[in-house]
Image (tube, rainbow, N blue to C red; front, side, top):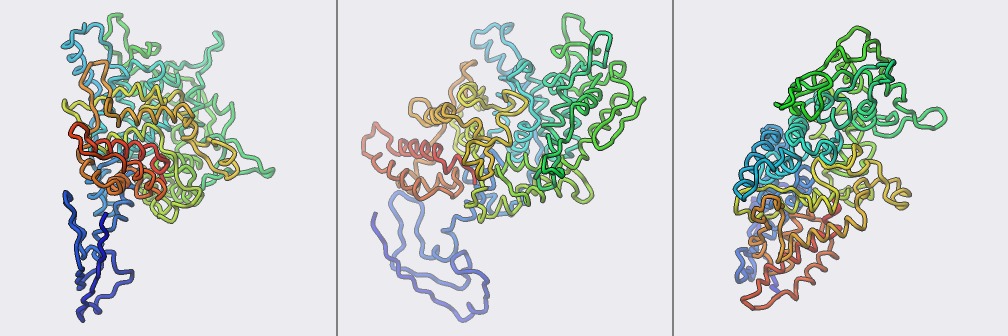
Length: 601
């Protein structure tokens, strides 16, 4: 590459000195400054010009784009460069406030609509409509992907997925054939993402999909004669996994200790039994049309129940009597079943553990695996009281994303900073941040191949404990540093290689398919690399562009040199080989496989 030596002359009018700047020249503070040079580079086949004025006017600086790319990596499933540039022009708080106001279409309705459309396609392809089942879990998957490509409700969808990894249900269970129920449950997460945490907790507790998953649907009162006792499954998990955890916490997320230095349990088996009594008597609010004359009553199987209506309380099946909950709370005898439930929800919502418990899990989902005690404490305080309101999710989310520990670059090199991006988020990133060559307008994706390889898909957890545990410690090095690495629990040699094979599949000349609808024999949906081919004329320019999209300006010099070196031999003049396309494919593969991308800092 030809080197151009620039001789810069600054012509400073007298009035320049009347303008006082507190920082430095070169970041756009160029009022009254004229820059001339011996030459301005204008390379063949490039739209850009290396203007001398850009040396001082700030147009050549990418810091704000990098900062914005990093912010959006925490708050969304990924965006293209134009969107990053738009968001960069305004304060991040303004973008968050705008996102709070964006309506989000119903996932349940979209699941039903997609099933009806898929059925027509199946029949048009020669299938027998009586043999096409659904709406099932694949139709929910189709709807999830359709909702998350080209959509505007980016923050709400990101928070909904984060909540789905806390308040876990899964289609990889007895719920697999209830597509509309899956869609409706996701609507509960999505529609309550910016509301009250108490309402979210209550709605989840009453949802028939949660009732079917954790077995408090048709949970009867005690019948000692027949050795029947209330099921304890949901009672245990609402305590351990959804609200307060196993041990008493300080506001900063650290464990409270007794006089012997031991952790203090938040509950015991007796408490579980008391909460189990609370969640008895819940059954179907209504019944799906059926040929067996099953009606809406306690005991009707979950298969027959409407999965998009909150469970109904059947008081004659609710455990009577007094219940003793946490912190001395006594639920009095003689209340209705729903009054008991309201008291139990209040008991957990107002527990001192709930703030730090939820704060830590949301920070881990969005920003970093090992937040400082001070970070957790700040979010706990917001949860506990924002303008007199407890559990304001808007305030909590905004505080998490705008906290200095999330935004300040000074944390980037701190060993506690960062998190491993879970595989399905990497999948979403690649699909959203690049152009999808979709000729039929259908963005459906069953994702079964990716699920087989990595074990991840929305609402596809193998257990109520999510894909990985929030306190998982990968190895002795983490343990010695007192660090956690939740996502590393599913980062095995098998899933690591499988992910790399998926990246090859996305970027390979012969495959490139991103969205999988093979069960309907629809046309494949590959990535479209045409826009990136423009930058591939220079390997370093291409890598710098991908750095803005995928590595948030944090691509190391070592990785950048390695990728540019790998791109240099890919060249030639044959009309049969698209060398620029091959450069793009190689660069994308190496970026998406790099630790610089896989670790979000």
